[in-house]
Image (cartoon, rainbow, N blue to C red; front, side):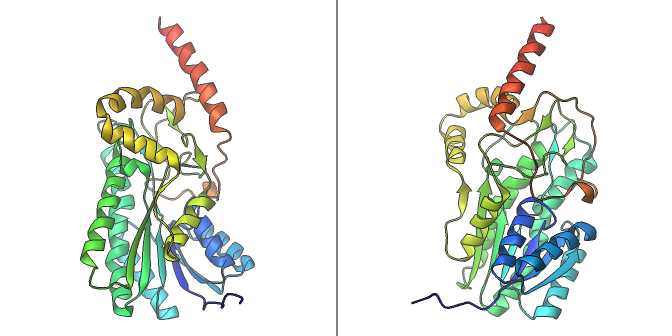
Amino acid sequence: MPARPRAPRVVMVTGASSGIGEAAARQAARRGDHLVLLARGREALERVALDCDGLGAASTMVAPADISDDAQVEAAVAAALARHLAVDVVIGSAGVVAYGRVDEVPAEVFDQVVATNLLGSVNLARHVLPVLRAQGTGDLVFVGSVIGHIAVPDMAAYVLSKWGVRALVRQLRVDNRDRPGVRIGYVAPGGVDTPIYGQAATYGRAAGRPPFPVTTPERVAARALGVVDGGRGGQVGLANQVIRLGFTAVPWAYDRLVGPLFALAAQDQTVDVTPGPGNVLGSRQEHNRLRGGHGSALLAIGANAVALARRRIKGG
């Protein structure tokens, strides 16, 4: 027997103007769902909304909002309810990155990374969960990171924020056990080919890039939406499990190796770094797109190895 068509769902996506959020919006559109798209920049959101209309979305709604501003999140959720009367699925994928140690990243940039990634997730939960609880059903899925399970050099703000997101998910699951129809999901990708690395604030010793093995934003989005349909959440990719094992089982070896391996595989040693806040303090819509265009991670590792070797030779 053919599968019975399901009714369109109301799917809210944060960070929908780029990367994983845009990929999630596109996949929900292909399923014929109603979309509520949140991000800071209206122009980039309208581009994604137009694409989603063409992909088969039942409807698209653009709700520009800074996820770190509680009042803006409240207004966006209220606008979605005014239009649709319900929200079925929420994908929290908004995020920003800063490279640098705690003492290197300016306070306002460091604080904004935490405000966007962690407090923005709290704001989303604060205003979405009462809706889901009143309905008695619905899914809230957060996109975390393998970095929310480990520590890496030069990403202090991002590490702290993503550990916090993981803790938030666990807390929300405990707090909402009395509503079995309300599900809190979580996925943790590793390196993903999105523009977030190129848009990052950079105050450390090298620019960032997605580490090997690099997956696509579409794969992570499919995993997040798959959780809603009863699929498996958690780590995206076997490499994440290996890294986590090293961090927890042999911390003395992990701490010794993570610095040189991170410099080789998760940074770009071939470009000069110009310190600056990237898109942390404000949207740079002209750089928003689905993919990051980072090229081959293995070729990048080779280029990094050559650059690091030359640097050592020059250093004596």
